[in-house]
Length: 64
Image (tube, rainbow, N blue to C red; front, side):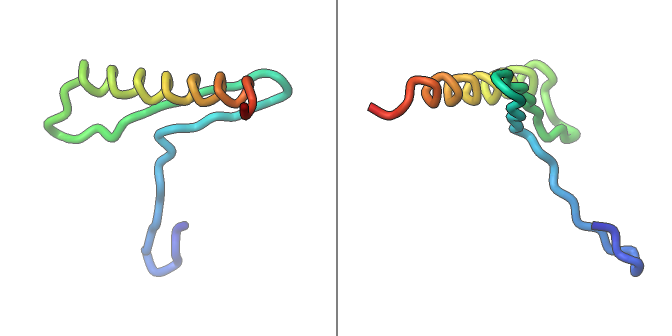
């Protein structure tokens, strides 16, 4: 939110899945800071997306 007094509170989604019908849209991100290594951040986002894809696969299989 943005307050009239200048206060602000935000959050950043770094793992998001949106499902529309039978289609899943996956988005992953990372928190970039001054000493971030771009290659490491990229790999981190790939791992986050891969984990969400695996969760969807498991959900499609159902509980056994």
